[in-house]
Image (cartoon, rainbow, N blue to C red):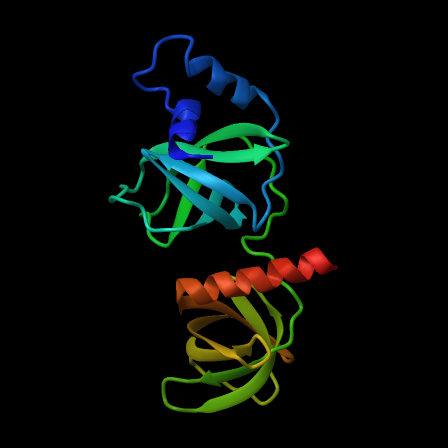
Length: 219
């Protein structure tokens, strides 16, 4: 779907009565397909941006743009998330809840069915995980599950004390790549530590999202 096609489908401003209005009304009246991770979509906020759904929570949808927007898109800008199902284009209204960069948070104002409630789906994948505290202490562990939003690791002998932030390295893709991130401890039990990514590259977040999606597709 090219940009001209998407603009005809969703741009109600400046169009004559009967051109785009009925099309939008028809789309809004049709039950939208379930929104799932990995789903290709197009974000129309003045520019038409190809993207992919990588997570959601409530009405907030996290989108990974295939390419940076050609011009700055302001936070709060209104637009449409375009989804295609069975050859039918459907537009869901919303606005940008965070500035458009490599990742976009788009807050829906139209109703839509979500495939799940969790922001990012987790997959029970075991990877070598190395942790480092601000004072230089290090620990080696293994992941219990991973997602684009964080990981859970086996606690073993890890004793972070009062530390709330750690540096994490995960060895993935059969040892050919290391995911590096700054993480926050969000859950601590006798057996596990739940970690949320505080700082991670877009590429590594998308890699973890792809690994989780691939696992659930196989299962």
